[in-house]
Length: 320
Image 1 (tube, rainbow, N blue to C red):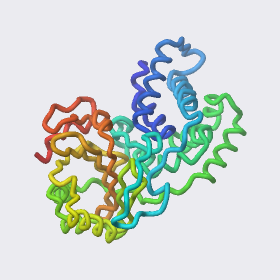
Image 2 (tube, rainbow, N blue to C red):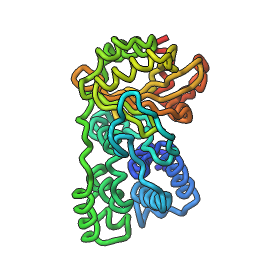
Image 3 (cartoon, rainbow, N blue to C red):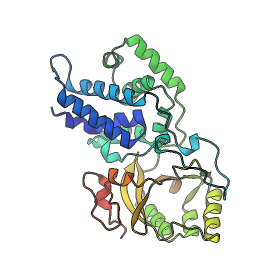
Image 4 (cartoon, rainbow, N blue to C red):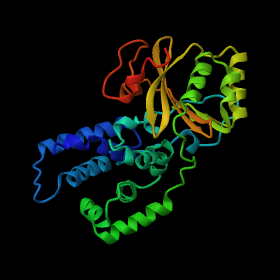
């Protein structure tokens, strides 16, 4: 079988290991190049575990000396409304999203189970683990490999794999947020309408009382509907509504959460990931990183043709 057949599964694995869609794509490309150049002997090892062995070694090499990626809420307490954003952190500090279309299996029966393991909160929690423990936990608890299969892949013993798995499970922080609801299109339409008009009343009415809002690359984040409302109204009163007149374009989902490309004055500005639960917005993460747009199949300019190959580009005229 062609190694390309395993691209989505490998991308999901590398994404959980590395916490970045960019790095996951690079790792998978390096894995496939090594596989094409390698001399796979099917009599000695099936293709799939051989590919995962290559991918694991690639990821472990990439993680040497790397700092742990995180979300804003993992880095410090919530900000006070009106507080300074602070200095931006480098891209390498953040858990970055990847579109579900690049990491989820084609079988709908498997999607619901796998989707939970590529949610931002879970991927961020994985980054707390040492790389080898991270690999063991993903292979055993997410991909459901046997201890013997993992031991063979990592060239260790079953006992060492079981020990690493126990330590990883004990050390893994709980991913705080409950699983998001299925996409509520009517709610999203109201959200997009209020967002694009900078309708503070409309936006606040959609928020859960415990909603959060963050904006990488800044550590600044807000906790609670009241804090978000105060910040929105404060910006409006100060005449600092820099995003007024933005346009949102659907960009598929991230761990089951709707994602949008935000265009400001017609140019790519930010990727917004929205979490929904109980008919309310429970969180939004605004990634001020236009480099994410091609990954999600979005054009860099509003109205330009979208790149193909991602679910995001299929909907780039949905609201306009």
